[in-house]
Length: 163
Image 1 (cartoon, rainbow, N blue to C red):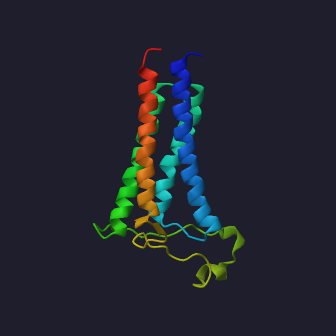
Image 2: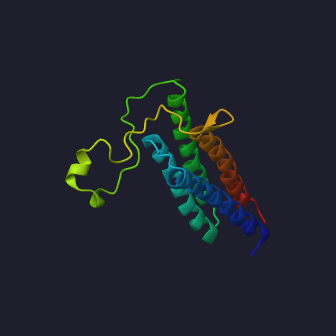
Image 3: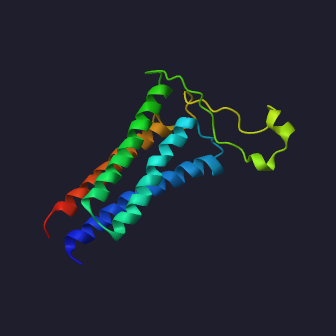
């Protein structure tokens, strides 16, 4: 295998691992830390899932188009994160009914569905559940997504270089 294809594979693997780490972190905050996600938090997870799938394809078939699709995926996630950050900081308002993760409805009886003390309740997209250095999880996800977009773009560039 030539050096260029190997470099492209490594960059794609790094980008996919970055998205996997961000998803694992989100699940850790949710299931270990007890921080229920709002609707916009859940939206931010989908582009990373797509990026992980694209990384699996890109490791097998390191091609510039796969890398460009990976960059587009995480840039979509960065856009959602910026939108969420703006909602959190009151830069703009959206008419959304932000609710958190659903409970397992099969495990509940009908009366539990109507009991307001059951379930996670409503998680508002406007409230910051956790922050570090003044930035919310949405903000950190947006910044990390931009870095991952750079890795995907480097992979595309590497794929286009002549070995």
